[in-house]
Length: 480
Image 1 (tube, rainbow, N blue to C red):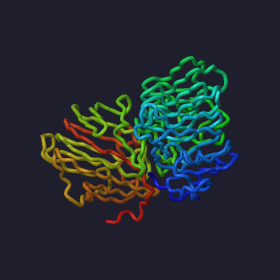
Image 2 (image 1 turned 30 degrees about the vertical axis):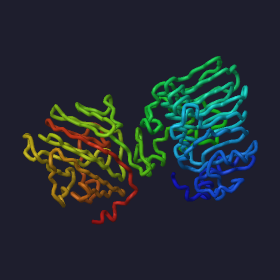
Image 3 (image 1 turned 180 degrees about the vertical axis):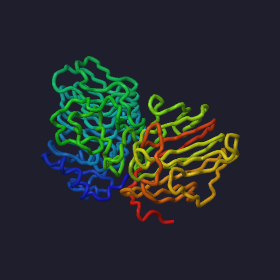
Image 4 (image 1 turned 90 degrees about the horizontal axis):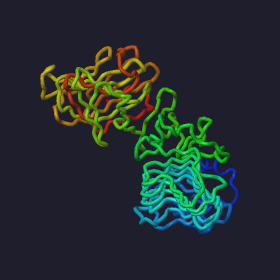
């Protein structure tokens, strides 16, 4: 479980804005709490949501610290309370550990409860509103994925707003005996579920929701890609004015709310540490350490030029049956960054190359060329070109055909200063320092993007192709 080490600062910086307008008592839940009832501080917080619910009154709220919480029994919300995460659904996961089909995460008989900001996964079902005719309770800003049964179940009442409901074994949304009227479900993503929206004796409709491919960043990261149909396609509502999304960003970012749990935010710090206008994070996904998986982002209709590119979820095979093939990966860079890849050249008549941008028109080229020109070669030689003066190798620069090598390419920028370091299996091959004017201009298919090239019947395979942005300075340039 992720450690929650600074609860006081976290509460002040993230949650107090949300809590300012709330009435009643606030109870806290944290895996590091002392579990001292009535749980009115982070220090004395309950360690599970059910314990906090046992002591609340109508009008109270429960705030849950970030982490992954294993749940072994259904959480019954039978009071008119607001139950919300402090850090959003992205960092607050309720895990049913593979519950049987009838094991719900939440059962909400309360008429006026709010469940806000959780990832709900591996339960028999996500959220059930039960036993109250015409209840106005609501679930919102939640990511409800990969449960055995229904994502959300309305039994006579209930509502859902701005949730992402995907890859569940039942219906994304199931409505039973609802007479219509009142506030309807809105701004939902229902995708990849066994069934979409099922109504049984229910007269309700979805509003401004998405049931086609929403174009998630990946099947594990439910943020939106820049070409998602969900961006700026929702319905604005009053509750959103001070609300945040699943990543604790403003719920409305661009005048019109997005559909689903996440607002699209290409410059958000949650993705990259340099939202300074020099980096476009369009189409990117990142892990907790800031690494961005690149290979899965390649789209045949946009990024390929006479290239054979195959991605199986682990490795990318890249080959050329023509004089030149190029893949442009949709990452625009003009700052400091590090690229890592595990590379195997399986056939080398000519060259496998990685283009690393310095500015929008000035890349450097890390080339791996067959030693005997256009004939088949048992080895290839690595060169770093496009620099004046050219970078001199500091270690052996030959690699064997058919052997996998780990390459690390680091580019640091500070104003016009540039520093570059290339490593192979942890050993420094090249270090170079200069300024932008000393980097040659190259004609590329898509300037300022990471690009891969093969030429003359060369075949390569990349695994663990990834990138992260850096905030380092170019001076001091490197420490050997």
